[in-house]
Image 1 (tube, rainbow, N blue to C red):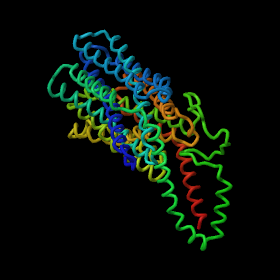
Image 2 (image 1 turned 135 degrees about the horizontal axis):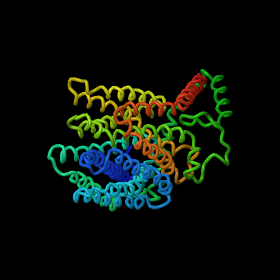
Image 3 (image 1 turned 180 degrees about the vertical axis):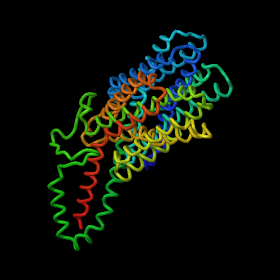
Image 4 (image 1 turned 135 degrees about the vertical axis):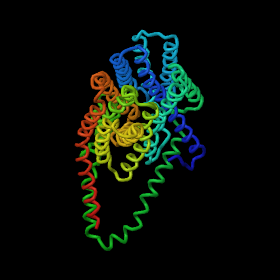
Length: 481
């Protein structure tokens, strides 16, 4: 994935990956810290649970709306400026939240306004870092790379849980302590990116990278040719029939998770993609609707799980909350690898969602276990493994793969725009659910289970198309014999 015969490319790829990874990780560190601290703020009468729902709704809705509007401009300007303009603002806002807590400002509208600004400012980061990685990695294993990169939000969430668990849970420091630490961590990362992050390789280097990639593709394609002459002699008639079949169907392209379509030359590619016509790119809408449900579950657990556990007087809340992210890391990587090597996406994603549904229902009864904390930790970890794994896979690997479809080959803004569609819709849908959670808090995991089932239903058409496509590919291969 990182290796290249071109001088400096390997080092540059590793550096860009690390910078992008931790840039977004520390953004999620701030979010995770807020979810823990805000639950404690309810207990100290800064605002009610219902008002916390309004704050979380405002943050996510503004984040989703902003990413829908701003995301499509990511590839039309300097990506580094695009990212850092938002992350420096977010860093400032998060520091102001810490100041407000320190001087004990209990005007709830102050935190609402700050989180609205925070949501807008953070909307530039995800589109930007994915676009930068897409520029630097010209390889057929880019999807696998994104599967690993998907762990960055989980690493950030774990850091936020550690900050909160150590500074508040163990050392009994004030609520603003982890807020300041998370904000300072993001500031340091912003400074590093200011000097080290690069939008894309220089033109001459990019040309060499493309040439290297094409040579590798040709080398891989030449290996099967060594067997053709042997096969031709024995199966000449069948081979001729197969080649004739291939010529007749050469205009038909298989699309991931969708039925076959015939594309005329003049309509083969979308030259200028925008937010509205991106919805008509194959599979984007269905994945967006499904991801909306998955993201809603992920953010309900992220924002409300600490408060849910506190209401049940469970100890070590921060460490239990971290389990969902510890499970999401291997879950996302495994689902991505299976999807890549076995060419199955929806077929893997839907069962994972529904297995996660069963586990979430089980969480509601984990308080009856003899070892309560261990029970919560195990079930929350498994929830992360299946639900969080699907979340990571769709948010990164599938999003980049969708933006690299043949129909978008000439679209320079494909990555940021497709990301803005999927992430923007999902964030706004997750925001609406934040208003509902305070009224269903006692049945939190049952509600999350219902959302997971609905998300899987949206992917059923893609499962059918995926099975048909694989069956047709198998039949085509059999015709060579």
